[in-house]
Amino acid sequence: MLTFHNVCWVPSSFQLTGIPGLESMHVWLSIPFGSMYLVAVVGNATILAVVKVERSLHQPMYFFLCMLAIIDLVLSTSTIPKLLGIFWFGAGDIGLDACLGQMFLIHCFATVESGIFVAMAFDRYVAICDPLRHAMILTHALVCRLGLAALLRGILYIGPLPLMIRLRLPLYKTHIISHSYCEHMAVVSLTCGDSRVNNVYGLSIGFLVLILDSTAIAASYVMIFRAVMRLATPEARLKTLGTCGSHVCAILIFYVPIAVSSLIHRFGHHVPPPVHTLLANFYLLIPPILNPIVYAVRTNQIRERLLQILKMGTKMMSMSSNVSHVSHGGFILTGIPGMPDKNPWLAFPLGFLYALTLLGNGTVLAVVKVDQSLHEPMYYFLCILALTDASLSMSTLPSTLSVFWFNAPNIAFDACVTQMFFIHGFGVVESGVLVSMAFDRFVAIRAPLRYTAILTHGVIGKIGLAVLARAICVVFPVPFLIKRLPFCHANVLSHSYCLHQDAMRLACASTRVNSLYGLLVVILTLGLDVLLILFSYVLILKTVLGVASREERLKALNTCLSHICAVLLFYIPLIGATMIHRFGKHLSPIIHMLMANIYLLLPPVLNPIVYSVKTKQIRRRIFQVVQGRKNSA
Image (tube, rainbow, N blue to C red; front, side, top):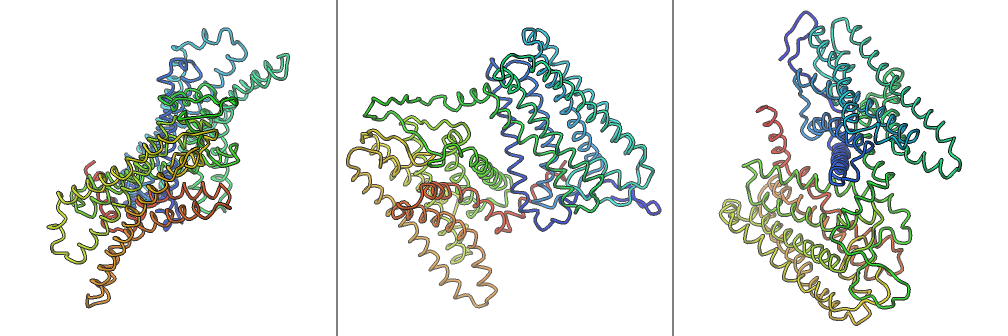
């Protein structure tokens, strides 16, 4: 509600615009922003879990790292959920108190993060200049006091900001904030009153925090550099400086975006508004994403602990040149064929796709579960498809991350066979679910009045069980057919996960039975399913053409578009991967690897996006759920 006072307003709420000038691209921008937020949450939560579990990491350096991870989680969570609400549902409305609360959290924890970097610089200084007394000086109690001091400083410095706005500046020119979150200067610029006090205070805080903290960190590294230069050998100097590499990277990741954003805000008035807002969001997102990656990659202790956790329960196979027969010992997975040193470059897009898969399919499941009006056959089948896609992705996730992120390609034979069963099993399940969804569309168009009477909850449950039972029955013999084969000499697979045809080619005995059975399974499941889907759409098209008006025909066919897209997303990569495997022997191994990954990753990533964009009911229900939660709050 707005109260009019001459030419100014007293707003009870504000309207955030998201990314000004890019409103038409908000839906597409939500994909990278949502994925980056998920990566930030998973990365920082992993750091916290590893340090908590491993008692050998209970040292000052890692305690400060945990504080940094918690701060990064708070910073990203303070802004990104609201930003995604704007992108997905246009939910830009935010109450005045909520806006001031968000402003306090953002600026307060940015101040706290800067203080933690100073504390970490002090930790590195003590560790290098006085290593024998490091543990005695930086006790658990002192580490806690330093963290508490950084938090109290943030509260004391930033606490007056929302109070000064609330008490001194009640009138505003407009309630529209051309930003994606409530930033101090963005709100102050809308006020009608004299904002010089706010501007001076904000500038003072910026000086006291960023300039003094930067100076303190620089002074610490000057003393560290002096101590390092006294070391006798270049190797000792490089090794000592290497312990500071992660901290230096984290400092640059934090301060460089702040400096760039501040300079553009002050002097880049000719820069388009979208650039200002995107930089402001990246300043809050980049550190939470990159900090855990930097520390996991550059810190041996954390990397080793992560590898130990990932390898738990997996038997490591020792390779020996004088052993000529390898039988059921294990396999070596492959990332980028012929270029293992390039694996980290593909790790980030693959991690992004996995995160997007879990986020998209989890959203579909949550929305259908929460909204009673979506408890209809079509959406039940969609939930089964989402569960299948998520399960298919999770079947390949452990080994893929192990290869690309941690350079740990070994996999035990039994683990490989188990993964093989799940990958092929969920592939058959997905094909069966697509057939069920084609039958659902046929019934909905052919007999709309009897639609819910035919596809009852009991019938849907039986169809789902039948699809699962069929997959188990046809794929169950595959592990036993592989186990009967001996494997000689070569044990290097072509992918970062285990497939039947890939493992089968390494056997040093006849694989005719395996080949025939694999071909039979493809014909009886995937081949037959394609024919059933085509037959369903022939009947659907025949029914639609019998409808009198052109508008009704288009409306009926439009209800099938999402399913047609899902069918094409599943079968085209499958056919492409099969054709390249059968007839593309001359092609580069990289092409084979890419096609196999596209076949397994493309449908789980795009299916929830297709159904959310193309299906009005889901899009509307998602918006209603978010709006309902906001109104109830």
